[in-house]
Image 1 (cartoon, one colour):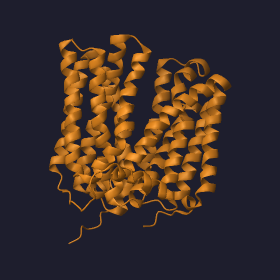
Image 2 (cartoon, helix red, strand yellow; image 1 turned 45 degrees about the horizontal axis):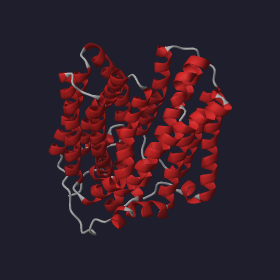
Image 3 (tube, one colour; image 1 turned 120 degrees about the vertical axis):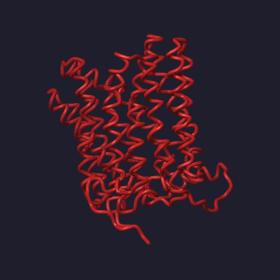
Image 4 (cartoon, helix red, strand yellow; image 1 turned 60 degrees about the vertical axis):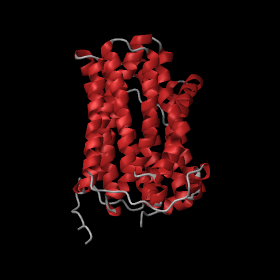
Length: 409
């Protein structure tokens, strides 16, 4: 007998037991991981006092994603995704245990932090495609938008709560306690995965090879709808990556201190939470192609507004707008990609998206710095926001089928 249709509401997807378990477990674990990010950065700076050494932490997280991303997608399509997540979550938990132990012993060196951060990043490279590809199997097709909205909601809440708790814990209890809390937080996901009723049904597949691993790239390039949404995502990250300039804006343009800078950093997350909550209340959106392009245009215009503003609260409003527009775009893009991708290719499609996700912010930070040097701080951000709008117009010309996409199954 088929499962009865769930009632509509903001938390419709949570009526499905397996998704609810994964959602709650991931919420706890993400908050713990955000605490760890704060602790690692703080610890490296304490150990070295070097900005270059601090930048190396980001490199440790990026390299595994770029080198192993396609392999992670292939494993997510070939193995039981639930079991694969159990392995990757256990590996990340052990890395946090190592950080807690060495820090508590007082004998940890920067190289050890780098090694453990890199190993955790390797595990996360295999975990992310499996997790994203698993979600469509846990909810009905018509509930996928709600599930993805709730995923973004819990992630944004965790990115606000995690660093706050992490900072307080470092101040009062120490770095080792932060790492220990993060290690314990992985148990929430592991328990959720063990309690899930979902079981993988193996299908006939080709032997593992580079040709099979690259099939995700060929699929994305051959699907204009998926490829165009990835181009939109990439352009927004490259030209709209102005958050790296926030400390300079706070000091030189808005003349606010650390507290004001904290509000500026929080504003996009506030906008994202509001947008995700709104989308969670909505039935699946129609005219998704048009809406995703409008969302990226709004993102670009809000970025340009932030660059032109000299008023603190107006800047916060524009930054909240970027968070809201990015969330709307993210939910639509993710829903489109999952629905348009066969289950046997979802892991590899997600891995290709991870490569865009990995490269975009890095190029965006470089672009923001170079543009600010040549054009000045405010004008560079304005030009970057307007460039987002220009890219949308170009993609509309090159991929007219995107504007016509309605979201129909």
